[in-house]
Image 1 (cartoon, helix red, strand yellow):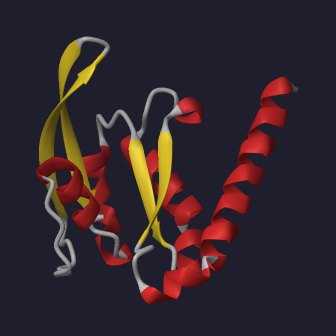
Image 2 (image 1 turned 180 degrees about the vertical axis):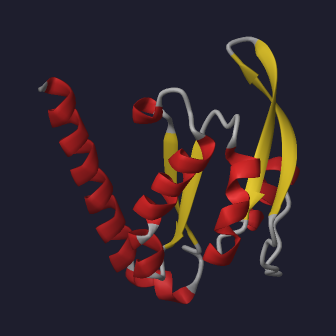
Length: 138
């Protein structure tokens, strides 16, 4: 997550890995509909022992990016619990329609070349999207 955030904001990539403790954030100015908007991008610790710190960082969020390791099926399986925990701690006004983005990372690692986890992830996302579409119609 940290590497992706640094690549997006600073156009720098590092192979050095250091676990985030608590949270870190960067800002980036982007043009949205002819308006200059300053984004605050928060990188929160992915380890469950830091999950209780989320409430201080999640409140006021306009979107949430959930990231999983494509080489670790368990990290994909825990996305629902991270989503639920975010909604509890952030308490958005409209939790049913709050925007989430799911990203798979570490695709550059040798284990990712098989792409089995990536395929499973997209199948699950497609299944959930289809289920949501069906519920919206009813």
